[in-house]
Length: 519
Image 1: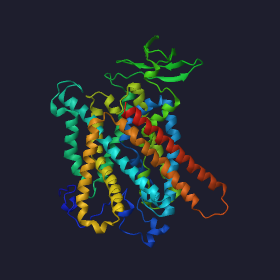
Image 2: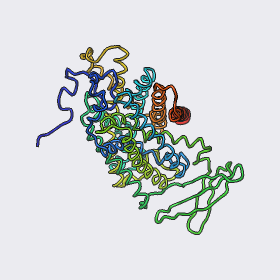
Image 3: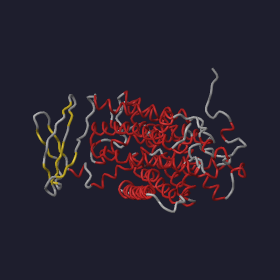
Image 4: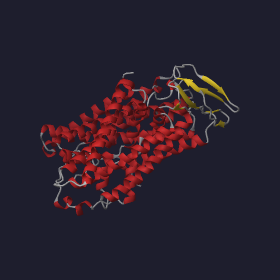
């Protein structure tokens, strides 16, 4: 059997006469060197895609599921419990699906095939540039999160190999987290990020799907059949009573040898600081101060929004997927995204609910960190996540680099064909700057929760703001003297999407800056 290696051809490393960035999912308008012909501009021309309906469902699910899965149990804890987390996800699902349908409708109306091209064509130059900048920042932040995830999983794996607990003093220098992240990044991520093309996308997609489903299965199984070594934290839910400072607390505790589900009530002042102990017939409940674990107001539920937006954000890649279908019709696409989002909801909800119930308020931002280091099944999940993230980093970097390249060429006012000689130099410089900045930030940011809290607000823009603006502009451009009731309904819905997205972006971003980053 002939040995096949990735990027073994020298032309893939820059020694090629074709100097264009070819971002298949996030290609900038100015790098589109092949003008659309009349056949492509017609509805019949769009039906030349090869993706079936079931294939499109799988691709959308693959685009939706990712590393954000690890943060969902912590998001349930932030939201205030299982009921609040599920309600929040179900409420968001309607807007997520409608945003995907709106983008397909605008793509068909404008005959554009990528997310930013649709925004550019429908909403104009200024909004299009803002969209491209948002995509670049979002992919940059996601790359930081990927490096942090690599460090998290490596800490656990090294602890098992060294037979020492994580964080123990006196560890060898080569087990230091900063060293292991840097070594992995320079040996694997940087070589995969420099090439002009990314022909290994299909392998990364396969690893991502397998790793995501495996992590979900492990979290659910470990909750149903827990190990004796696992000692979960307290699970608290809040319900206001009649008094202004009185709350109804519900507790659950599991011992090392057996599991008990106990429900008890205890009235407790909001001003109390010491934990209380409630004796029952089967187990002792430890009830901690409410301020230590629970949101102090309903507004705190929105702190879980970044994780949900980050997890369900597949809108940027949805437009190319829609145009790759054999029959790119809005009605068919509505069924595709509905089925895909229901599958993604089941995966995220299973991980979030079981992970939160297993560890309670003490769950880590990366749920895999809550499990013992010597658990073999969880170690396999960590290996899957590392392999998936190694390839996914280069894909996200490629997309961000393509957007930056497009912005630079537009600023210079030159097409790609006139800048062949400088393409390789620009590509290497862009890659090195991107790589070093993401690595430096990942070394000093403690957990993925802080990164997701920042880029989750941008994900809300992709889900709410830009689809809402596209819907408003598309309806305003219709040449009708008498506007039917449906026209007003759709315009109003577009305004609602923009308003809701702007609120989520502002609230989560401000909270991330002043609470997570500056705290």
